[in-house]
Image (cartoon, rainbow over all chains, first blue to last red):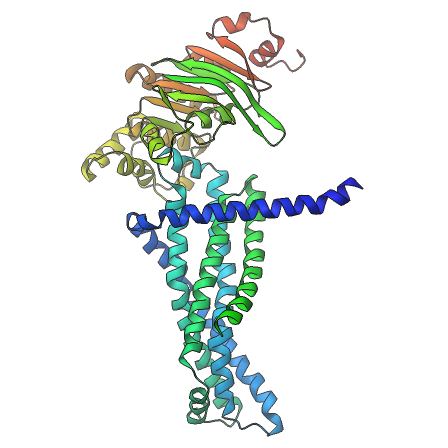
Amino acid sequence: MFRLIFSPINLLIALFEGIGRYVELMISMFRSFFSWHKYINLIVDQIYQIGILSIPIVILTSLFSGMVTSVQAAYQFESGFVPNWFVGSIVGESVLLELAPMMTALVMTGKIGATITAEIGTMRVTDQIDALESLSFDPVSFLILPRVLAAVIMFPLLVIIADFFGIIGGLFTAINAMEVTSAEFIRGLRSWFRPWDAWFGLIKGLFFGLAITSIACYQGYFTKGGAQGVGKSTTATVVISCIAIVFLDYFLAEILL
Amino acid sequence: MIEVKNLSKSYGNRGVLSDINFAITQGQAVAIVGESGVGKSVLLKCLIGLIKPDVGTIYVDNKLINSMNFRQLQNIRSQIGMVFQFGALFDSMTVSENISLALQKLTKLNEDEIRERVFNSLKDVGMENTEELMPSELSGGMKKRIGIARAIAIQPSYLFYDEPTTGLDPVMIDSINRLINKFQKNDSVTSVIITHEMRTVNEVADRVLMLHNGSIIYDGNPENIKNEDNPVVQQFITGDSTLV
């Protein structure tokens, strides 16, 4: 009975403790921001790991996202009341505003978030983080700052790539599956296009990158309990990041649109 | 000199260390022994400032380390070489990079001097020609030796060993014990060795501290511990589980 009453309270306490530790870790990271030049090699390495190596999977997912949007738009337009060239508008706006940043973030949660947590978590449970500290390195500057900075730089660039290939996928399907010419598709694309929509997608990418890598670093940094602990932290990263992404998606839309 | 006064540490409701007091003079080799989970590693991590005690003070070279900020701790840590239980080598770096990382951070040596120091450190632990190997290519004993090489490369005044011989075969235990003795005698460093192995205690330590239930129950030389009446101490040194 007592357990039933107290377990939600304990969960709430654990949640606030976790938020407190996360904020504390982020403050430490932002404090070390001005020493970024000391870690330039690590930042470049992370830009390669997080950004460059993720380009193929981002191209693949964005291409298919654009293609399926085109197919579904065509299905909606079967009634004939909406002109076919509208498919360009639908694909363009969907990709720029939602699909490119969202799909990129979800794919990167699995690819980058899980990897970062597993790496840092393993370092924690095998005393490598303590070893870093004993060698006078600040683990936050050494491990977390380069990853978060690399993500903040690379996520918007990945979103640009996703925008491009999403629209290319939509165009390809529209030409092949519907009787839409490329000129009509581009007419649709341009008719509803507002530059702010593209900027909005990039801003979302930046926030998603910050959220995914900071959550992943936090989960890895506070991992406990050997291999099982690393597994739990990695799962937590994926789950919490996905929730954070949908929350941020909504709030950024409310604030910026 | 290391001085620990009234040190206590607990995690939640579980008290790990309670009112610990001891001092280690320059050049001593002190073994800290005790059953698993008694708080030996926590004590060692407190000494290097990796864990902050709840109560009590720790002085290293007459400097209070509890209240030090990260930069002040860096100065103290540059004099302490720490050997972790499983080596704690950085997975993503080669042996050479593992050792040179600390030298780049803590010394003003140029690249050639660092390369020479890495070579000499590896030679000291009998691990020449392993510079380009990754930690995943090393056995447990090799990792521990490289961990020692990394610790001695900065030429510290203090060497802290966290279970340096646990899980090794008898020949490797002897080899590690000889290394500890070698650095102890030749470079007159102050050594603190966390261990379960009475063989290591007998071969390397000038003094033994035994922890039990968070307190020190024996503080003396390794010869006299055999005559100690405390059944917990006797049980530990004989390894007889029926004694207590």
